Length: 265
Image (cartoon, rainbow, N blue to C red; front, side, top):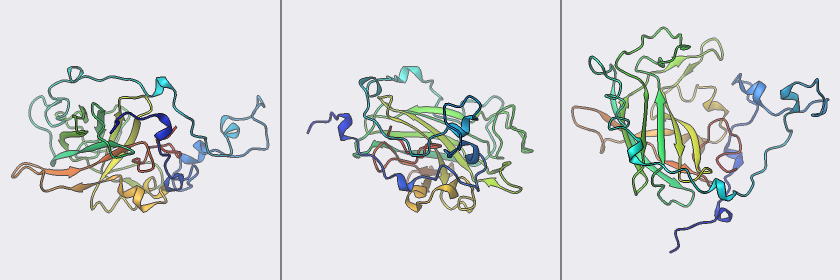
């Protein structure tokens, strides 16, 4: 069997499973959504959002530059890059529930994506990011940085340790809360193999109440963003484990954050 593939083999995903560009419950989508305007796009006085296209973007064939590179090496990573529990610890261990997150990265045909760079960032156990503009009341953990990265192996497998993040309030509506989540950024062996998404935790009641999640009109698409508790990978008397598989491109692709047309370009 020939493992090589051409751009023509890419299966475009079902766009109907994606959030609408305009979702009133999610305030920032109001300005970002494509809207019609009585003015023409060539008008110098027309605001930027008025010049937005009325129709969905068209997926184009990939060029050679998009299906070759970048190349990542394990020499580019530090020994603790995939251990968020230890990679920022200074005078002790971070506070919170210790967990393992692991899974497989595959393409639209189910083939393993080796040497894919998986970068993650998150809030601490109290729900606060290590960022100067995060003014949430929860304290900053001096021993937790909230960032890490790992390369997938020959089977597309990745694994990292971290502290389970906490939920936090955000200024969308008066009492909106983001469920506990971890941000993922994936870069495969081609520029077109790109994914930015969020991982939620199984059983979190805030998932269904989150205005961002509620913009997704497909339950199957939402389920692809929820990591399942995996007791088989848990370490006794140490930490629980969650499995989160990801798919790059194709109609089974994991939902791409802030891109209504999905991972296909």
